[in-house]
Length: 156
Image 1 (cartoon, rainbow, N blue to C red):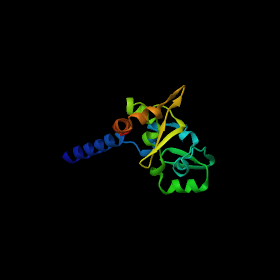
Image 2: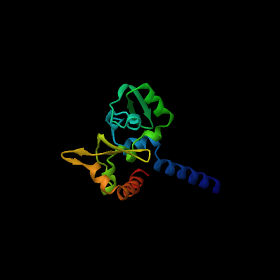
Image 3: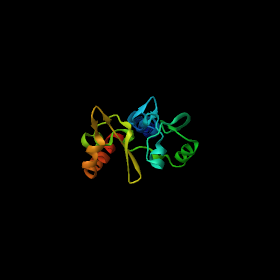
Image 4: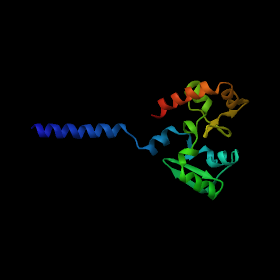
């Protein structure tokens, strides 16, 4: 009787734990700024670092990484990304860094409005006479600290 009870308890515990965890790809698809799985509106994440410019990628140079598809402007950039995807992925799941810091909100971005800070890619909203990169630059340390904390609450 005791053995059956403990076996049932163990089984139910396993079901409960697996029900609350999600694989990384599923979590990223839910929390990242993706358009039908496409990250950064199809812009090449490596180009931001190599030439400090937003460059549209090509569908034929795509890489799927943990729930997100990235496009690249060259085979060289594609291979560079595959060596270390975490280095090139945008912070805060590709959402606007300013909005994440100011209000903890997931706000869309303009992929051509960006900043590389301490080897990380930050993207910003820039439409309708509102360029949040300018606001970010005025209080960067504070906003970055708040954005880091807010993203941890959302993503974990």
